[in-house]
Image (cartoon, rainbow, N blue to C red; front, side, top):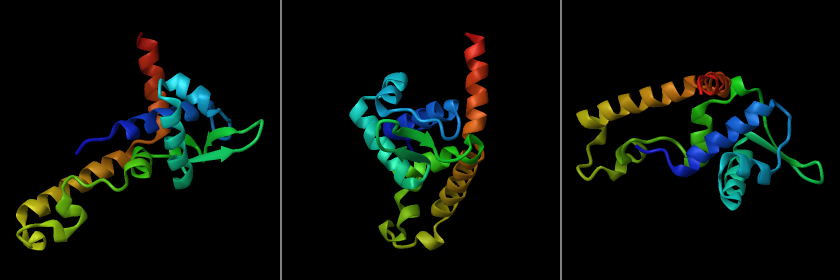
Length: 143
C-alpha cells in the first residue's frame, strides 16, 4: 500500500486550512503557494475534497476554501478516501473475484491481509487534524 502524492498534498492542504480555523477562507492560489503544490493540481484536489465534504468552497470576490467542520472532526482517513478512494492493501480485498485461485473467502493470506487492513484504517481514523495541528506546532518549536 502506498499513499499517493495527491493524497499527501491533500492532507497538507487540509492542514493549511485547519490552521486558519473553521470557516476561514483561503484562495486556491495562496493554498498552492503556501503548500508548494502546483496550482492546477491543488484545484483538482480541492474539488475532490469539496465533493467529499471535507472542505467547503465559496464563490465570488470573497470566495475561497475552508474546512467544513472542526479540525478534530476531520480524520486522516477521510482525506485519503476523498482522494484515492477506500484503502485496500491487496486487490483481493477490494474485489474477491480478482483472486485467481477463486478462494479468497477461505484464504489464510486474504484473512490476515484483511485484518491488517482494518488495523491500518483504524489507526488512520484515530488521527484527526486537531492532533496534526498540535504536532505541527511542536515540531515548528523544535526548529
